[in-house]
Image (cartoon, rainbow, N blue to C red):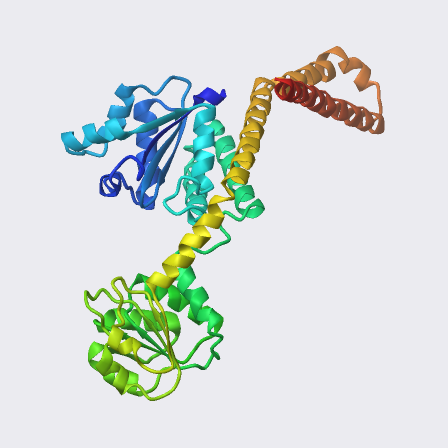
Length: 410
């Protein structure tokens, strides 16, 4: 179970089209079956499959080098067109040994993500290893790999500021909304019920905002968001004028419209008074005419992008600290791997000592033991059991310490 047995095949957004990578996606409920088939067909010791929106990682444990023939066999299981399979084979990134563990730690720590510092990748890595271990498909080596990778990535996120500055639209939009310090009973109108507004809506509901109304092109999506917000006030775009006339003090808008949805005529339907608008649409959902309204404060994607760029710059300054933690994690992994190898090498030791005990008690000293009374026999059994336990633990402890000391010196 040496470090070189860890091998990784990676297809990611840096080298491949995201749509092509998507052709290798396998739903979580079908992954155990796929892993079982791959391990049997490719004669692997263990395997973990990581699939995200922009990467696929085949994490393998194998004494033999994973050659191009077996790589081709693996991709053939996806039944891709010949041209696409050849394309992906040429784009495949391969890692082995220490290079592989560092790559996986970088992935789990978000240093290889499209957005530096996004924490979701660590959850995805942990779930991938958990699934394989649950179905006994990871094997002993990848169990050690998974533990080391997750622990190291956690240290990256807790010891550095690589993820503390928000860069996602949802998080930045919510932070902008919070900065307005609006009372929890503020009337809020949400226009659009897609993924972005739903994410911001969850923040609103969690914070305790409860005076909300949802307007969307289709009623079904509007009702789905209304359930998240805990409101029954829903409508379609046909109800927009009435909703505006009701006098919202904040608007959160994000639609798929090619043109600005809120225009000068909509501004005239709003009652007088201060109004905050969070415009998360691309292109903007708020026209220049609407922006001319008095007492209006708009936060849009342009202003959020400036903040995101600043936050990404701050995150980037933390990469050096992250690399130091990864190097530390790699050393710990190698030590843990060596310690596990010692354990496996001495795995028969308890059985051997147990056999010696049974021979001693049942044959060599059988007559002597028969001459003892019951209480004395109990004491002898306790002494022998104690010595057996110590004779098992001590050699394993000394062997581990010797190996680890040698590693530290090398």
